[in-house]
Structure formats: C-alpha cells, structure tokens
Image (tube, rainbow over all chains, first blue to last red; front, side, top):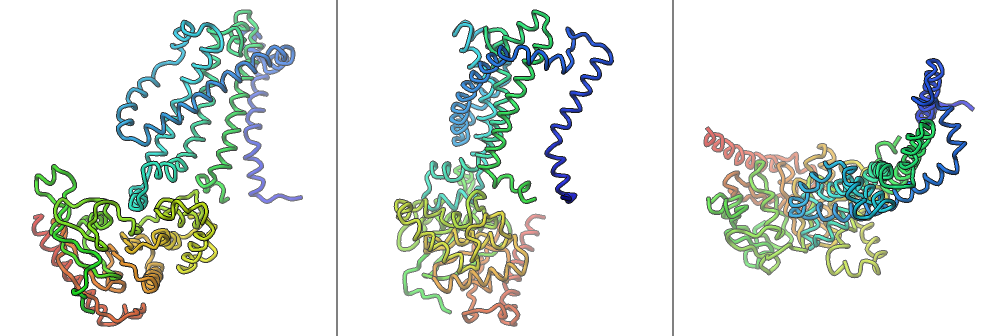
Length: 261
Length: 276
C-alpha cells in the first residue's frame, strides 16, 4: 500500500512527539554512560526505569494519592473559576472591582501559602487540595471572562431589540462562545494543579509524589526521585490530552481551520 | 408616487434630537438633530450620507434602543419607550453564531422574542419549517444544516436577513447590509431583498453609502448631513415597480443618482471649507 505525500506528512506529524522523546532518552542514556555520570548526581533513563519497576507498588500508591488530590483541587478550581469568570465577564462593575485584586493575588507564589494552610488544616490532604485549587483557578476565570466579554455590539443590538434579557445574551451567546476558551484554560490549569499538589506534598504531607521526591532525595535515591517526576509528568500529559480531545469534539467550530484539511 | 399624508404614518419622528450623554447635551452637541420624518405603512426608505453622520444613531432611535433627548417618536401608532420587538435588524457583518447551523441561527430570535419564546419547544418543528421556507425564498435551499463558516459572504448575509425576518417584523432595519460584498453578489442581494419586500410589504429602513442601491430599492431616499446630523434632502423615487436590474442603466435612474450625488458633493464641499 503506497501513501501519498500528504498522508506521509500527517503520519510523521502524529509520530513526532514519540520520535523526539526517543531521541532525548537515547541521548540522555548515551551521555550518562559516555561520561560515566554518577547515578547519585544524574541517573540514566535505564536506572530510572529500573527503580520504576522495582518500586512500582510504592510509586503507584503515591501517584494515586497525588492524582486524586489534584483532581479534587482542580474540581474546586473549575467550579470557582467558572463562577468567578461568569461574574467578572458579565458585569462591568464586577470586572473593575475584582480584576486588580485577582491579578495581585495571582502574582503571589502559591507555595508561600502552604505553611499557612498547614496551620489551618494540618499536614495531609487539606493543604495539597487547596494549593492545587489556588494555583489553577486563575486561568479558568480569565478565559471564561474573556469569552463572555467579546460580544459584537451589532449582535447585541439584534438580540436586545427582541427584548433579550442579559441572561438570554449570556446563555445563548456568551457561554457557547467562551467554551473554546474554557477547554483551552482547563489544559493549562490541570498542569498547574499538578504543580500545586506536588509542591504542597513536598513539605506538608506524608504521602503523594511530592513526599516521595523529598524522601527519595534525602536518602540519595536520585533515580527514584526522577521516577516520581516522570510519573507526575505522565499524569499531567494524560489529562492534558483528555481535555484536548474533549475540546476538539465539543467545539469543532472554533478549530475549523485545522479540520478543513 | 405621492406620499399619502392623509393616513396616519407608520413611522413618525417629531423633531427628534439626540445627544449621547448628559455632558454632550449640556454642550448642545447632538449626534442627530431636528429629525422630522413620516413614513407610511409598507414604505421602503433609504438613508444615505457620509460616514459618521449619525445614520446608525438613527437606527438606534427607530428601534427604541436609544431614547431621544428631545422630541417624540411614534411607530405603529404607539410612542416608542423601549426596544421595539416589531423590528428586525441586519448589519454589514452577518454576526451569525459559528456553533449553530444556518437553520438554528435563523431560529435564534424565536428563542428570545414572545410569543414564540414560550412555545418554542412545543412548536419547534413548525418554526423550523418556517425558517426553511424563508431560506428557500432567499436561495439558501440546501444550506440550512450547514454552518455559517461553510457559506460564502453573500450567503451569510442572506442568512442574516432571514434571521432578521423570522419573527415577521413589521419593520426591517438594514445598516449597510451589502457593504462588504462584491458588486455582482450585491446586485443579486438587491433583488433578493426587493422580492422579499414585494411579497411581504414590511417597512424597510436601509442605511447605505451606495447611491445606486438606495435608488434601486427605495421609495424615498433621505440624504443626511454630517455634524450636524440632519436630513437635508428628501427625494421620492418614482421609478415604476416592480423594478428590474435593467432599470439601473436607464437615464431616469442615472439622473436621480447624479442628483443625489450632487447633494452629497455640495455637502462635502461646505464641510471641507468649514474644516479649513
């Protein structure tokens, strides 16, 4: 079966992330072996893989903990982010009042909240969930607000003359219009949520990948620490791809350029 | 065609002035001023004038989206106090919603305006049939289930006009609806609009830059001046109906266009002198 040039190009495009990853892994392995880098400083992929297999039960337990904690925090971020975005995007007054405060808040390093959260909620799930939430709601809010605020004045006239209430305009036009922004923001927010959980677990938990990283580091098990990082990366990537998939299948109209091909 | 002044007019502007806010009102700066206008039932009027002369402001007044600072507007026998549901609007940008099919875009007003709104669920099939019939009338047969971005610019504009007409408004307001189309498509759409109007006889207010368009379509053409935004010329177009595109090549037609062109040219000249 022969392929056209276009088909071949598409195949290559689809395979490109895997090819790049393979190249990096091979180079990494070669450098570690060639320069005989100590496993305590910078472990080779083969060493990381060995640890991953050796401690798979332990890693899976911590990974599961990190995963569900992140999902809870992310879930709260979606609810709060959407509500806040809805308020900001639909009212000028709310926009003016809330936006500066929110920007200032977003500039604060969320890791700095962890000691405070520990005082309030103790070591464990609480600080991790809240850190994941705090770090990830902002992009969702901003994107929903932007989607709602970009309404053509002509269309608004067309609807208002028919007696459309603010609510009609929001639900018929604003919300559908902001859906692509929403899915786009989830892709960003989920990766941030994993960062939040992991960072929090590093200081304020006895479970989770963050905890694993710290304990592996302190016992000089660098390969195990890298294995933990790898697992977080894979989880974030999987969720990102999931939202990408949903985005493409629910808001195809916003991606028509790439679909037409 | 003499204006039938003996019957009550459908649209009646009585010395209407509008300043956009209180500050401008205090400075006596009006976007439109001293507008007196009487339009009979079913009349097609066109408003021409330079950019920024207040044509769009006039549209907002006629639909009740803006209240006049002075004077009174009576439409269909009642003073205008708020958005007028008996009007449908279409603009230069079709502003169709890309996530809705053409059919669902045309149905949008029925989801909003009463009495259709409360019956929308139960009568959806009936309304959809009505929308399809309207789309057929403007030559969009077979495009009902396509998305707006799958249509050409001219087709989008046709769909936009269908959306403006679906709730059977008594008054259709068009703000440079054909401005972004090429010349051939534009003339096709003139005929589409002419046929729709001929069949249903709603009132039309067409705002345009295009003098040929205004003369071909309208019963009466008003020329508006810029700052102050006033109606300076009223010209009845007595070309016989139904009008065919051929009429645009007759000397009668070109004479009227020339005459209007002269008014606008004179206005621009005095405007330029004032600026200097």
